[in-house]
Image (cartoon, rainbow, N blue to C red; front, side, top):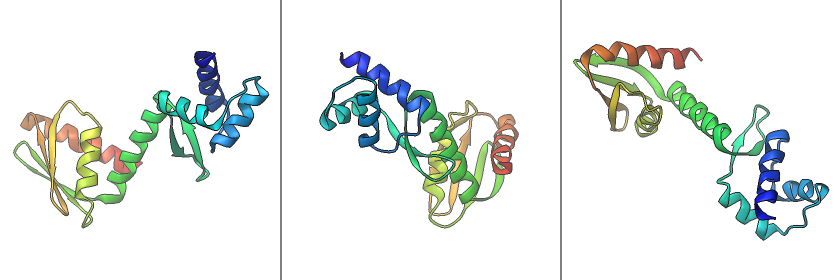
Length: 150
């Protein structure tokens, strides 16, 4: 019964914008599942569902690929909001950011998992990105510029 219910939860959140556990419980009842709030809460943890903001500014539950896409969108927004300029120093890409945004920008670059980037170090308004090869810095700059264009 648990796996059937969890499969139904995944189906429901893919078909509907479900904002709360109460709404999810109502959909489950309509589908013939008798459940408690505690059970739904456990299912949400087990399925590793998270809430993201949709296009209208409302929260909704998402899982798996949708969650990954939402995370990537968040990292892109952080880059767009925080990055001021870029400069190359051999195989180091120096990113200048809005004061206080360097850690978020560095985390965003690292989360992109670009094969050219070995890692990033952040201060308050600067990020040093260690690019694996000097020749790859231009590719990383292009990737970031594409994100900046939206």
